[in-house]
Length: 302
Image 1 (spheres, rainbow, N blue to C red):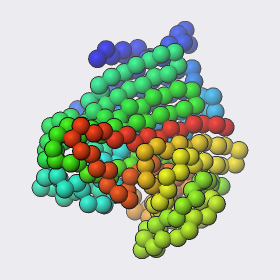
Image 2 (cartoon, rainbow, N blue to C red):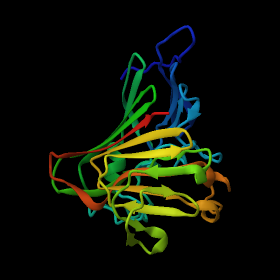
Image 3 (cartoon, rainbow, N blue to C red):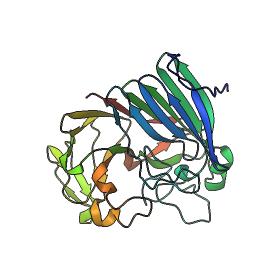
Image 4 (tube, one colour):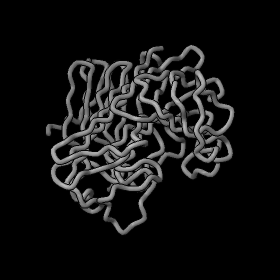
């Protein structure tokens, strides 16, 4: 892999990836073009930041107490939940003697950069989870990679799992994206037409409304294969496109729960909503030689 360490400057229209070691456990990769600034962490293969210069705003929420040192999951951007979501059972091939961590082990390990590419104002970076980490946790010969493709007013995320040999590999997963908002009570998520399971009400099932608004804690798993949802706040519009999923998760902890989260400020709940592209209802099952793709595309419309 060829790595460039120069950065964008006003004298050049060509952006470049820049490596910024933050500790012995983590390196951040940053890129700045005339249209955007982005930051990606090797720890968790985590897209931490995307600033849209054309709209003059942060698209992804970053907690004011975020820890980027590579010693705990990063409270920002796009955490990768793999190979299980939340506190769901891990794959049958899970062999670690440690208690299964919430949202899997992918977000709490360092990934390797496999590829970088820049063409005009489009930049991509691809990570893979090292084989020794997978072998420590799973009795399965699987690989997982994530590719971020960044362009003016657009983020494309592809999470790819490949099962290379017997046995079958069954898992759940999510792209747990934190979207930045100015005021949660002025924010709506539109386009979720299917029933949802409400974690705040014992996972009972309810019919969806035309839009999700926020006046208290929201923790819902929509049983939805909708291809697009809209995040709306006043005149701002972000389109969220989903692919190869069976559910969409919407979460905001609200005030009381937010105050209990160590790496969030007490008022952080006012400034984000998670809209997550996920497989939670049926485990994705891969026979030997098969691959799965989970995709989220974020389009900053206005």
